[in-house]
Structures are given as C-alpha cells and as structure tokens.
Length: 637
Image (cartoon, rainbow, N blue to C red; front, top):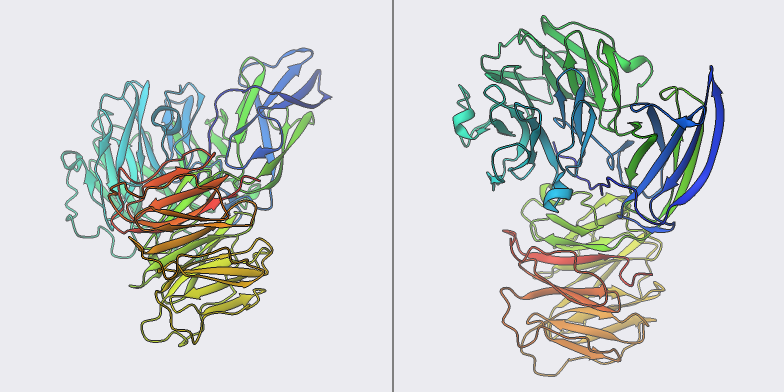
C-alpha cells in the first residue's frame, strides 16, 4: 500500500508578515487573545511553503509554553487529497515514535519531523538532505538524541547522534520498504520490506523469509513494530496478519476485520507481553496484557488512524492527518494540528498544490476548547515545476509538482506515451500507446479511451491534449488521426493522407479552438485556429523531430529534434543541444517561462528559459525511458 504526496515544510517565520485580526475572549478567570500572521504575502505560488504563526496572550502576557492551539484549514477546492484525508500534513503508517513517556515525534509524508514534549528535533529529510521521497518509518537512537528515517525506495537517513551515514538498500524492484524500527536495545535499526525481508540481514533474528518469497500470501507487509527491548519485532499486513520474530511472542491476529477497513498499526505493551492492533477507523484489538483505555470513535469518527504510542497505562492514537488522541495516563503534547506554544507562539506550516484559496483558523486556549480565534486566507497561483513520465507508467515530480499516482500497475504490457495536466494542475491523465486513458487527482475519468478497434495495423496513440475546461481531450495517433472526447471538437486530421513520418506530438491552441500535430520528418499540420508558421517538412534532418512548442505570444513555435536541435519559426532562438553529445536522445520539449525545456530519455533536463531548474533524473536514470514531460503553469502567468 502506497500513498504519494508532497508537503513543503517550514520551521520559522519568514519575511513579509501579514496580520489578521485578533479576538479577545474571556475563558474563566483568564482572558485570551490570538493574533495570526502568515509568512508570505498572498497570493503565493502553489507548492511553496506558507507558515501561520498564532501569538497567544493570557491576561496580556504570553501564554505558558505547551499551551495547545488548534489549527483548521478550509480547503482549497483543488488541493490534492486522498478521499477526504488531507495528505499535505500527515503522519503516515509507521511514522510515529515515542520519546520516553512525555514526548514523541510525528513524521509526515515528505520526511518533515515534528517534535512534541520531551522529544527534540534533529532535522528532516528536506532540511538536511534537500530531497523527498515517501517516508515509511522513524527509529529513535538509544539516547533519544537522534533518529533514523527510512524512505519507500530503501534508503535510511541518520539524524542527531544516529551513528551511520546514509545507507541505500535499493533498488527493490517489485519489493519496497514498508517500515523501520529500532533494534538490539535501540542500537541500530531494522528496515523491513513489503515481502517481509529484514535489512540489514544481520538484524533479521529468526526471520527466514526468502529473498524472492512473500511473508504473507494474502497482502504485503504494511508495517513493523519493535519490542521494548529491541530483541524482537512484529510485522503485519493490512488484512490483520501478524508475524513475530526474536523475543516477540505471537499472541494472536485479527480475523474479524470489518469490510472496507485495513489494519494500520501494532504496538507492543511496555512489558513486551502483549500488543494492541488498530484498524484505520480506530477499532482496537488487545492481546496478552494489553488493555483498553478508551477509543476516539465517539467524537472523531471520520479520521483515518495510522499510529499507536503506548505509555505505562495508556496510549496515544495518531491519525493520518497528524491529530493525536490521548487515553489513560497518556497526554496530548501536540500534533500537526494541535500545536504547542513556545514563547507565546504556535507555528503551523502548510501548502496547496493547486490554485485557489485556503483559510487557516487558529482556535485558542484552554487547549483547543476556547473561543478566542484568528484566521488568515491565502490565494494560490499555479505551482512551478514539472512531471516526467516513463514508458512503464512511472511518474517523477520536480519542484511544486506532486505525484498523484502512477499508471504502472494498469498498463498490462503496453507503454505509456504521454502525461497531460488538467487546466488547474490538480490532476493529470496518462495515456498508453493503445489509447487507454488513466486519470489521477482531479482529472475526469469518464471521458473515454480511443475508440475500441479503431487503430489500424502499426498505428499507435502518441499523445493526448486537454481542452481549456478540462472536460474533454483530444487523442492523437501516429497516423495523424484524432479522437475527440468530452467537450473537445474535432477540427480535422490527417486520416487518408500518406505521411513521410509518424505524428509524435500534439499541442492545442490556448483558445481550445484548434491544434497542431508534428511529424517526425518536421512536418507541421495546423487545424482550427492554429496558425501555420513554417515546418521542416521536405528538409534533410540530422535526427527526427519530436515535439512542437508554441512561444508565449502564440504567433510562432519551436520544434525540437531528438539530437536536441531547435528550429524556430516566428519565435526567438534561445539555445539548443544540437552539436552536443547526449547520453540519450531528447524525447520531448514543453513551453517553460519565456522559452522551452527539453527532456532526454534518461530524464536529463535542458532548460533554456527564465525559470528555475528543479532537478532531473540524468544522474540516476530510470530503468524505463522517459517519454513525456509536463509543466505546471507553462508561461508563469
């Protein structure tokens, strides 16, 4: 099970403070007030960080440290969610760890670490390593003065007094990392995979899962938990299967899981003689000396629960949104949404991945129950960044782009050929060479595929272009034929015409009242209100033409060949890779700022524009060649 997302973390208040009104409200004998400020002026570009700081006063003095302030967000309609669960600030499965009885860490999807109570912050993936991948676990060091984080691709990163450098156990191919737990009295860690392997192998105890085998035959391993002394560990899957290794006693597993729910956490008791198992709806099962101290189902029925933090006579339950509910002698020291004050301030970081607006409200003391509040609204402009798509359907995001899902599980031996964003960049379609369309994010999934049986022998689908509304698209084939879906209008195609080279790319006009097709021989075919400005058809080429990109004023365009050569028609020349030896051929080009950006089959990016470089795969090429690149807000409007 894999959820994908990006959260841009922030740990301090930036310049450009905007004040929203403060409200004073009596609460018993104390009068509280809150002023809220945001870190960057509105509007802000989607995908960038925004920080809200709530200054809390009690009878005119800063509120005591640790006073909880509850933040809520009125969501942007285009904000990326999984069902109704916000993933931009989230503590996922395995992403919780205790620091004694009085503290804990929560880790979000991007590897941002949040510390509460006695736990101390020692760094996050983004802050220390400047990268992001889905984080699958945190393991504290024996002293509590450090921790390791693990990512889905099999890498383990040290922080604080964690004694090792970055360790890369990948690539895992069809396997993946699914959890990280401390081992051997806290000295070192165990990284576990979906197939049930434990890495390093020296830490596996009596886990004899073969390298190519599966621990559970009904579902992959989804998480892990260590015994208190680190001499044993449990692995579990989403269907409730449990496996015990080392000194961990097997005491039972879930067999009566309600349909539609999954198991998300297991937590050994402090004695090591029992454990609690939890489902996503907070249903709990108790084994051995584990006891029930309460359940949040009566007042938080819609949350998706992913973590348990046991105490000597209680536990904290953590939701996927990073909320904390405490029972027994456990105390809520804070969460991603219930932020403790320090020097009278509580800080909340968030972002949006699509244009629109969000309103953040801070609800004041007494801890999350008072009436003092303040709010601030941010308007979001389209994000800056890009996606790459490989032939096997994998999606690679850079900058503000977000991986909303891959087509890899759906291709069935076909090749992905194009990725097309929705007009508001809150989703995208991926199309394969047979014309099947897969929708992600807010992309509409009911518009249809290329007409069944319509492709001729040797004809393949090569690209997809969206209408301005996102309520339709055009599907283009190598023979120059067009299938119009939804509100897309068919303006003509090259059906019945013998082409000198296959059509490899397409681009609609801004109005949606026309489109261009480009052939590998450099031939340009303009339909509707698309204006023909010239072509390379009939001219000798060093390499086939791959893509067409209109310039920002819409009066001309550029063509790119697979050797990186650029041909400008009624458009300014900004540079090319022609004459430069490339590791792999250029496979596509897109509009980027005032000019264009090219991508190679190895994921190398060549940026000839006034906009930033957000990274590439050139230094770590994917196994499957890159076939498409798509831009967020191409002209930066």
